[in-house]
Amino acid sequence: MSQESSALDNYKGVWGNRIGFGKKPALILIDFMKGYTTEGQPLYAPDVIDAVNNTTEILELARQHDVLVIHTNIRYHLADQKDGGMWVKKSPVMRAMVAGNPAAEFCDEVKPLATELVLTKNYASAFFGTTLASILAAEQVDTVVLVGCSTSGCIRASAVDAVQHGFRTIVIRECVGDRHQAPHEANLFDIDSKYGDVVLKQEFIEYVLNN
Image (cartoon, rainbow, N blue to C red; front, side, top):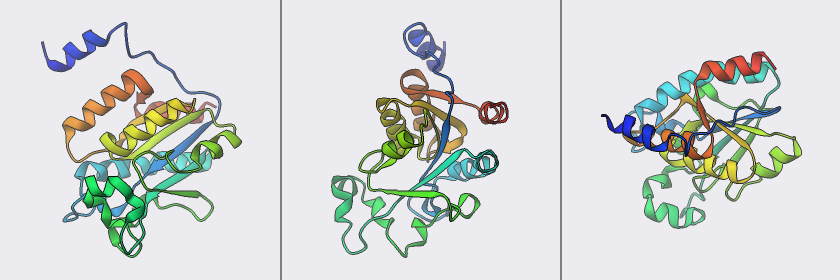
């Protein structure tokens, strides 16, 4: 019996309930920055390139159907990154996320429009230390759809915080990526089991087109 089968059997009937889409979604693009898609950069994760490419279609669809779109990035104080606190001490690779560093720029394929919100965060979760929850509540959003990177870092942290703030949490499998397949799959398994629904891109497309 494979490890995955064993995990599924172990969780069956205990974890893995489906929450589904609600009435009003928001598409949250988390940290699609060039540091993850540029070969030679310390943060480079080839699977994130696929995630970016898979996101272009759903981003365009969201724009066409007036789905609220919010982008996040990470940006630290240029001189010392003290606003990164303990995270940059634990993960000094994140110090690259400063103004003027090409690694901190948005990927061109999913670059925010001038009319779209951009929230800057200093830690993994898109909710921690930002106004995201208040914005979503004010817009009467009940469903948070997460895409971006990395699966084991900012996606997972944002998914946990999303459900803790009372939102239906959806992660689109093809539109998230990590630097290694093992933590990518393990964290998708955990998110789908405990915090939200991991869905295929087509499921989101059909939901938008039919609502």
